[in-house]
Image (cartoon, rainbow, N blue to C red; front, side, top):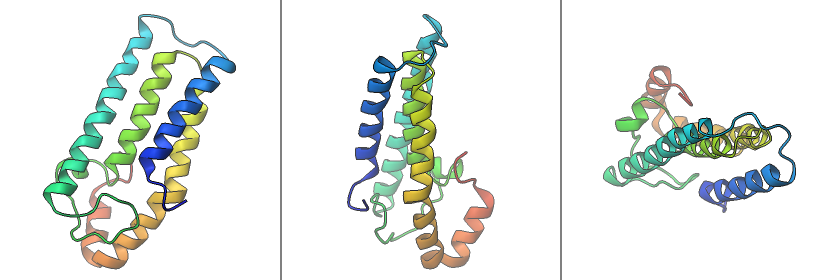
Length: 147
């Protein structure tokens, strides 16, 4: 599972959200025009991902999970979240769920968040602490994991 990058899981989650919405919508919780508010987290999630990716590239370090980082990136969007790309993924899913207007997609949003935490975030943070030690612990005290 480590060979599969998080954007692949995001794509899978989007497909599952769409399938669940159309097959088992549970309950319609929002209609038009309220569903259009889903564009806000969708766009914010995309912006967060682009900004985080740009920060990694600007600092000449890897964006790929479980690879050794050359530098601990703490500026830009990393000042508001230790994992802005994962936060961006969740915002994208949340935006899609809002746009669809039914309750069932939120189950996937929650499951995806837990999946990221268990499969990526904990191990990445362990690796960062091992590599950057005090610098990491200081950063961790200042910036929340998600938001």
